[in-house]
Every structure is written in structure tokens, then in C-alpha cells.
Length: 113
Length: 113
Image (tube, rainbow over all chains, first blue to last red; front, side, top):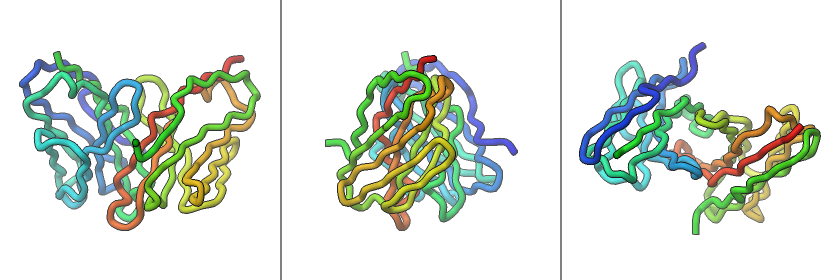
């Protein structure tokens, strides 16, 4: 049973560029959440997708957007990249009604130069 | 003030020791309490979750929640070098918002042989 997968593993972008990160949830899961983890900090909630719609959102600007596909996979898009966007981006999946039991992928390390 | 406070450590203990990890929180609406383990350059791994107050045991791990004091703990018995990692506490409220996890900063634990 494959767990949560994310791609790419690492990414280097320049300020002002746009980036798309991808996530495939654990088998049987239909809800995907995205988190940003700065070095030495705990993950911070960006947003959550269920039934192809954004269900909840954390304190992140509109430059951060997402999408969920009919097969439950998801994308995170970040526009107009800033140096401060450099972080580990984590995807977590869960079943409906069990949002407290989230399983994380390995993350995508984004570096903005 | 952060919603969830966690002593970042680092914490260094000898093999076989009992480890105590703690978090305090300010949001009385939190009802679900989770502990994650994160190895270097990996995604967080769910260890345990607890609903409301009380204790929960799983092998060498015991989670305790005291909602009256807004204080949660994770105890690791007979600690092993393989337990060396960053331990993150996370919390969520009930209802439709339970999918948003709020994390502590993480405690770095080293168990030396």
C-alpha cells in the first residue's frame, strides 16, 4: 500500500517565478492538506481540499493556491515567489471524518534564490 | 503568543531512559491531540492521537492529555537510539475544522548508546 507521495523532491526557483508542487494521497484517502515547514519550525497549515474544493485555509496570501483532481491527487501553486517562501512543503492525506489522523508525504524542499 | 508552545530542546538522554516531551496550548477549543515523529529531511510520521482528556498507550509510548491545564505529554519508555528525531505535538478543534492541525515547534531528541 503506497503512502503519500510528493514530487518533485527538491526545487530551486528565482524570486518572482511560479512553482507547482504535486501530491498523491494514501490509498483510500479523499482529503488532502498542505503545510509549509520552515527550518527549525513546526508545519503551518496552508489549506485543505475535499471533493475538489478548498474547505479550509490558513493565514497564507492569495499567492498560494491549490487544486484537487477527481482521483484525489492535489497540486499546490505559489506565484510571485519570495525568498521567504523557501521551506519544506508537506502534503498530508486523510479520510473524511478523520482529519485528526493525517499521514504526511516526504515533502518538497523549495529554495528561492 | 503562539497557540501551541513546545520546548525545542535539544534533549539528550542515555539509551534506556524514560523521555518526557510536553506541549502547552492556549485554545480551549482543541479536542484532538496528536504526536508526530520527524526524522531529518523526512515528513512527519503519526505516532498517536488522543481525543479529549486521558491517557493512551501504544507499546513504549504513552500520551497524556490534561485539558484543565491545557497540557499534553508524550512519554517514551526504554528509549532507543532509533528514537532520535524531532517530536512534534499537533492539535485540532472538533467539527468541520478538525482537519486543520496546529503544530508546536518540535523538540529535538537524541538518545545516545
